Amino acid sequence: MNAEINWRPDGDRRGEDRYCWVCFATDDDDALALWVQPCRCKGTTKWVHQVCLQRWVDEKQKGNSLKCVVCPQCQTEYIIVFPNMGPLVNFLEVIDTLIKRLSPFLAAGVVVGSLYWTAVTYGAITILQVVGHKEGLSVMENSDPLVLLIGLPIIPVGLVLGKMIRWEDAILRFLQNRRTVARKFPLLNFVLPINETEENETSESSLSPPILSDPVSATRVLCGAILLPTVSSIVGRIFFESIQNNLHRTIIGGLAFITVKGALKIYHKQQQFIRKKQRKILDHNEENVNVYMSKTSRPSRPQP
View 1 (spheres, helix red, strand yellow):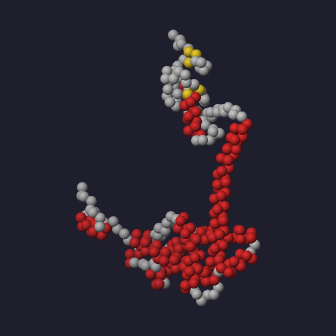
View 2 (cartoon, rainbow, N blue to C red; view 1 turned 135 degrees about the vertical axis):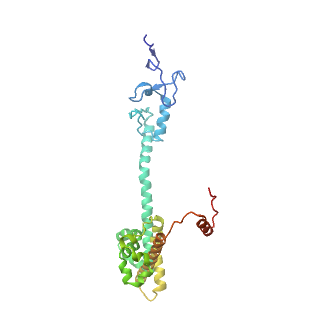
View 3 (cartoon, helix red, strand yellow; view 1 turned 120 degrees about the vertical axis):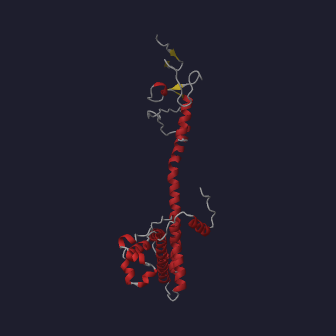
């Protein structure tokens, strides 16, 4: 027996029930709902309520009515047609779309411009601090404006890039890979002590390079780079007061600060490595647990 073919007012020829793949409703749930076949899907999944599909499209477009939306099953792009609302509305739509597209570029330009003028200001302050107030003003007044606009922002950029050079790690690796240097120069034993165990082991197996790959902290690098001219100026005034030239005094103060700081960092890293290498994991017995808990002042866990 042939199935009865029904004709709907919307022009749909049906031999089977339809259901909406968005709300899962059928013809029996809402006989007046408008249906649409927006894609190439076949079977019952090709049907969807017009209202349900529009709500789903709104969720996908997220406020951008010009964004293309495709079927999640067959990837067919939906044909979305807007009614003609008149020239004024069309003009406002063009203006709104233009503003949306240009806003990210304008915001990026404001941010970049702010960073640039901040760098210029910091560069000018650094020159006044390092060279001296009067000398710095004289240098900037007699310089070409184009040179100042290019050269001043290079100062903070150069300081940040210089701060990212981890020369202390390279020196420590060099010294540890050449243990004979520490043996020839006894003063280096204070920085690179050699115990008896390391003396008896081979250089390849006894001491691997220390773990110095600390993650680079952006805030620490930025703060260190920004404060370096100020610290250099203070160190120069305290320890090298005899030098009359402000620039020379600041440069020597900065080199002295970087050298002392680097030496302390090398020593600290080496001691951290030695402590880590000499650590031990003890047996989990009552004696060790009591000793460990007494040192850490933590309550012991109940024994299973």
